[in-house]
Image (cartoon, rainbow, N blue to C red; front, side, top):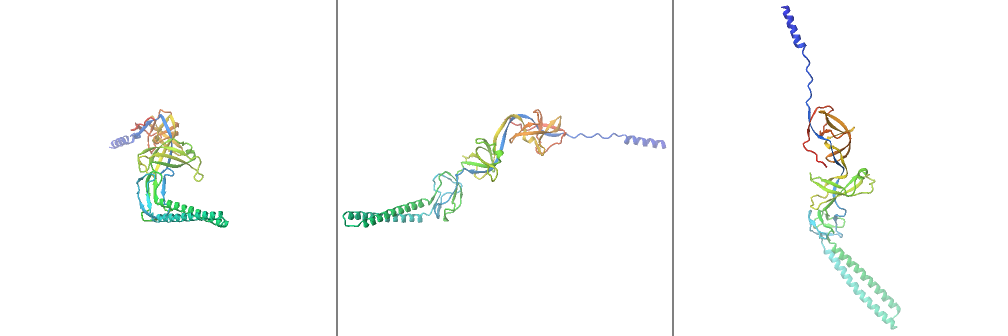
Length: 363
């Protein structure tokens, strides 16, 4: 009996005590998208942002040049107007009355001038005949000169009154669109009160301040792609018009003006826009998709596929655009880089690389 128990115990020890430890399970490879390092062109992109505005002098708030009551507003917001078109009218009655009064005063002054001229002629003839003193001639000359001056004064008054009457009609000297109507018919207005705003939006400008080292890269004539808030996905071609030759001492920036044609009026003045200016290009350089870059405090890096595992490789980045980043150093050109988006893989992580769904186009 004792022998059989010993044998049983020995068997249990052999069964449980001699079991081999389980082998460590290997991690499953992580599926990643990858793309080869390639050669191509990478432009230098300068970003600028600001509101789209009409050209200087082509966005005008029209105010009356004389005070009065606004009789008519002939346009509304969104209306297109011609150069010289009447936009609004003041009540012309008091201005017309002022003109009639000035014309009457002119007629009276001319009559007085004619009378003074006749007195002078008679005084001169009487003096020649020896029947009048020289003082009478002098007095007649003074009266004639005063009458002439009075005519000239009233002529000026007539001209002023006529100009004031013509100013009762408001217009601008360029074609544009009505941006705002500030005053309704019937209100009393004066030269300090704008009535209508007219803007020519057939061409617009983005005026953006840039740091001097960035502005130095921008030159007139360079092309720019314009993205406007409110028009997602719509890219409009624009050009750099000018770069300020001086730096604003208050802001420490230089102003860049970017002009865009807007013949179809699809762009609205005042809209906020982002311009991507192509300020140069590096040709036939090593490049990777921008989404492959991993940026950190230590600089930039990429994850490359090395013998089935992810390996972080530090790189020096040159020019960048919205698609590609130039690699100055760190890669040889025969690697595959992982397009990992916003996450990073630890070194040595097993990966299964598949080609990116969208192949980059050669530039």
